[in-house]
Image (cartoon, rainbow, N blue to C red):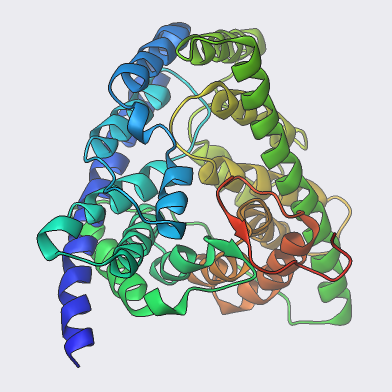
Length: 399
């Protein structure tokens, strides 16, 4: 009972902080997106915005530049408290990235704000290293849950993402409480999440399960290639460009030039309209590949934001494209891809399955769950988070 009372109180504070930060993030990104779409000339300034963000992190944020990987490292090996500056820097960096047309997400920002704000409680509460690990996991759960409106998925994500093949059950209570509270706090601030509809999911059958497995293989391989491409571009940029702020400047030149050359803003920003369209009817079958390239260049060059919403875009449009060859409803395939590409890239099949059930319903969640597990198996042992550890191999054929 003392444990329950203590961590309930701490989780309440974590949830309030993470939910409020996510509300600020989501409101600012809505404004940035609307402003950019109304004034497309802003995209021409993306290289300057990238250079400015790079300078901010080089001279003010070198201690927090690790982002999500820094959070995982601190959970694995707790040392010093994460500086508060992580929160304003990542919020500003993400806002500028979206305002000027980078192809990035928002989950990374929500994880960093939730965990960094939670970590400020470490000293006042005199927490031990073990308790601080739980605190950070709860902060990550609160950030993930509140930015997507998926409290169950957020709760599990906080202790599933740390290591492949092992769940950190010592943090299960704080993660669940912080996730639920953060989600409610974000809603209390008047923020509304996008609704994705799957009107019909057929009863389970042998053909349906086989189709889910085939789709899961495609989703897993795509998630693996995305992680490798993003890390590869980042490694090349670091090797060729020593001065860090010049990397997003060059990346901004490439992305902005591509936008004006193609004559569309379809593949920058969050891409929510295209994700919604993928659930409603056919979209161009090359959409997933274009978003893949735009996002890999953006994040590999050093822009801030996250990978998850672009992965939702890639997965939903890839699932939509698979509708040409697989006999499943197109909205169902889009929903399966929405969650399963993320499951493979982040190595979080349980959180992704719960997300599918929260967003699309239990019937669709059955197919999405199969796709998420198969995607996880086929995505290799490297994902979008470099500091994620391997506690247990995915299968006995892995060396």
